[in-house]
Amino acid sequence: MRIGELSKRTGVSPRSLRYYEEQGLLTSSRSDAGQRHYSDAAVQRVSIIRQLFDAGMSSRVIATVLPCVDVPGDLGVAEETFTAMMRERDRIDADIAHLIETRDALDVLIRANSRHRAKLSTAPEPAARLA
Image (cartoon, rainbow, N blue to C red; front, side, top):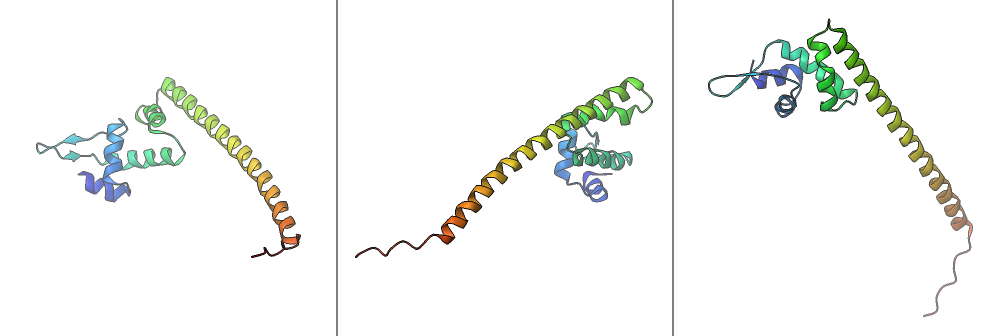
């Protein structure tokens, strides 16, 4: 199938499909005219790639995980994939911890601003300036 059909069948833009190829995540053959042609298996592969992107993985990490799909019976590949996924999970946990710290710091500022606004709303109006 050509890139347009793969795009329709997967819901992934042709531009993204070309990017997947550039990153070594997806392969195609070329016609004499240079058009990309994909096997039917590309539909499933694109689905897996999307799931990995949705899980927050970068294309670099996805490239390390995909061999587990390509060679499912290889224990060494499965171990490498597991290590890569655990590393990604640890990275996500660290990102979450940082976001929580950032939110907590913002909450301190919000409380300070709320107190300041409360003081301003109860303060007497300044005297009118003389002209």
